[in-house]
Length: 462
Image (cartoon, helix red, strand yellow):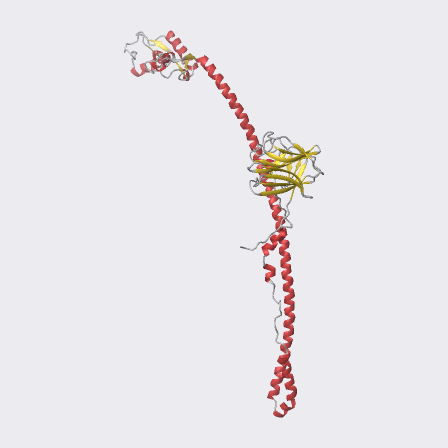
């Protein structure tokens, strides 16, 4: 309908909505500008539609048509193009609930929308805006969460760089220590080699100097004897006895021989060289059967750079990664155990509160989850044991413990605690779960893992 109405308001010459329409005596109307252009081109005042010659060179303005055109243009400019039905050029005033789309009144009566349910466009828009607003609120919450996660991720990225720099520094420090040891060992062994070289070279020099003196004396005897042999018979016979004694004296000397041990003892310097150095390294390095994992430590726990002790400090701004404790002030060992036997010693000293033991791999770090762990603890002046989910049980200990040895036998499914100072047994858990178990430490002040003694055993090859 709207398109047909627009056609009625269109100039027959320019086919656009009338601009300043004028009315000819034949009742046809045209844009004033279009009519003047037509007349100039035709050189006559005839109507462009019916060819009737106009009696007036300046026909009057068709004010009714002008007002209609202006009203139509104003409404068309104020009505968004999307508010018009593309099929019927009518205003979209209804909303089809079945097709979930705006329709006009003609669409409502069409076969395509038979038995469909409709709502006024403003009512449907209000209902859908309400639903969309609810979705928008969820999106805003999600966006807020994502922005917070972005901040955490940025902090985590910085923490990763800090970790890398700190770890690199410790690696370099360790290798510097090893290089220093190796350099010192190298210098000592080269010094021993040079000392032996100097001693044996000096000894050979002395032997060679003595041999040179013997060679010179023997050469003199040879020349003197040869001179006697060239002398006349009388002179020869007069000196014969002395010549014989002189010639026979030199052959009585012992032939020169190399003495035992004259050469460099290469085997002493090179034999098992790398093994012997490695065997000595054990005196300058330490080994801990349990290494603490700083990525699991509660933000209040400060893990040492050697990863063998913890202390309490101000809460740190650390990434809340899934492995990190956020409720229990605890830390885990870096390696889990599910087979074999394992033992580690912990120095508790004068700590006022601590918990030692093992915890299941399935343990949840977030929240105060108290399931699947076995431990020995100290607090409020007494010792207790606990096998979760059972409550703690106080046990009697004869003296205040300074060190605790934790023994885990995965194959026998036992966990025991003892005093390494006098090998006193404290307590043992039996029939613990067959799963991966992590060493577990909880403290209110600080604890330290003690290094194990390193030894080198050589076994004959089979």
